[in-house]
Image 1 (cartoon, rainbow, N blue to C red):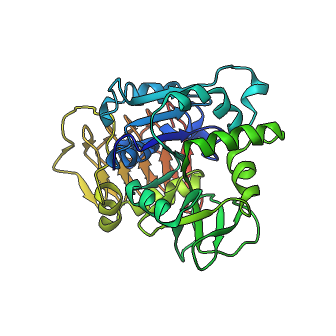
Image 2: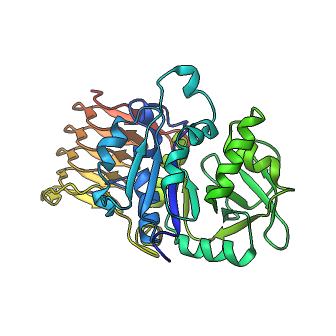
Length: 371
């Protein structure tokens, strides 16, 4: 694909967020996932691996951690001046303006689109975690003659997070899109990825706003299914919808299956993240580890089973961690038991404590807590 064919937009405006304490001080895009990644890493990597070299991030609220994580885009080779990564925060911090729909923010940044050379725009979210080649989406878009191509996921299993459902006819033309609630029965979920020509996007933005409508999907696309040729591109590989606590926990536990890990992180291309050099994990003679993902910098003296540990976690002697997710620099002191729990960064579990949740509702601790 010509690198200037598609420009990418990661739209964080009003992104669905029911992650509670995990997004208390950060946006959904920078929630840690998979022992050393952030959710936005997957979208950024997919774009770069597909030859998309112009990427704009529409920031909204709590974006300090976003700026810190992505920086100049160097970790994704997006630091070049002629293309590169652009973070576009809200033009105003007025609460009333921030509450307006995403089309208002698209309009405020229309000069960004006008000055960009690519013919097509790919609009995505950060909570759809997958490994996908957008070159195939473009080929499908052009071969069908679509005005808008929506990337969809097909699965007989119910989606763990909140996702819109779609219905398509025999030619994969979308005939109905529905929000994450409602009675629609369909095996196809909307992955919130939309490919269209830049001129069409700008036209949809202006005409919708002129009618008092300010939501891209609900107003500019939903309401025009009969007027525009909107086709679905079906992504069959692994998808994790991460926008609720239960979906975060359930999809994280799926990563412990080797076939899921390989599919998500290496097929068709590797996933990149911000580089943080550190020593490898250390295991003492008393350590017992099984079916777990352990990041670099960890110190394991106790027992870890079926869990995900981020960088710098210390599990002391006699401590037990099972079916849990412990984020960066967590400390489990001697003779404590942690089960079915999610701990944010810097959480400390004191000696001889027992912290237990259940798979359907894991215990969640905010960062810097001492329990």
